[in-house]
Length: 340
Image 1: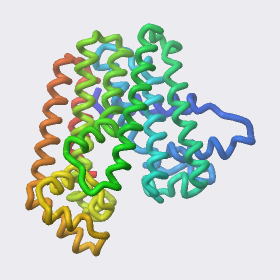
Image 2: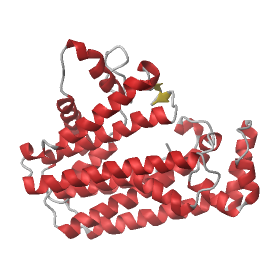
Image 3: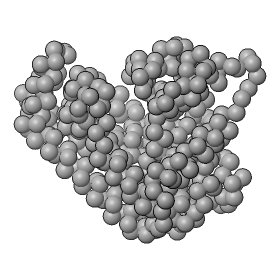
């Protein structure tokens, strides 16, 4: 079976598991559950079924199920894990939208824009809690308690890493200079930690040995780093017709992405220009041209490629087999060659 065929099998099961995890309360909680369902992309602001694309791609839970199956496990056993990682991911997005003052997500008003920051924070807290409750269903799917408890512990470590990465990301916004080492520490927490957990914990559900589990953790970590660096490249040099964002959108927001950090470390002229208030689009284009001339684009591409090679090496070292292994190779290739 191809990635497309396995996705057609897995994705509806993931949605069903997430709906089970959410549950339902009395009529006094209708708006509470509607806010959660809205952020997850299931309904519009009035509670009607949402259009296609509102829910996102569900890459992380898909990775969890494929990791389990590729190492010989029954993918159905990993469904509570898949639901948990997606609920956790959406918790982080909901709080991110408030912290970043973002009015839109996937072309729709963010939850806090519709219902206020206080209610959106509470909804994020609910998703965080529901993510943990989802994982507690692992034994009901036949995962031994001795396997489930370490998974829950690692899941909590991942939650902590997410908040540490977010802390650094917000702190960097107020700083003029950030080093490449600091930047990589930040994305390891904010992006790579959850992708690593998806691969590692899927392997643990499968009952894989410690060495194979560790290879899958390192595969996910390197994949997550490469994924974020690719995102940084698209944020400056991506095609607006494909990304849906204006050209050099990250420069407009004065984000300290990897190419920017590279430029800040190597050019005082770029650092002075970047410290100036946001100017017209021409100045943003000039900043992008400066970065390219400094070699920032090429350096970021090389770092993404190095992490891609490392991810592939750890993946193959774990000796995954079957259609799920082929689908994982295909998914990895798609993630790292995407243009949006």
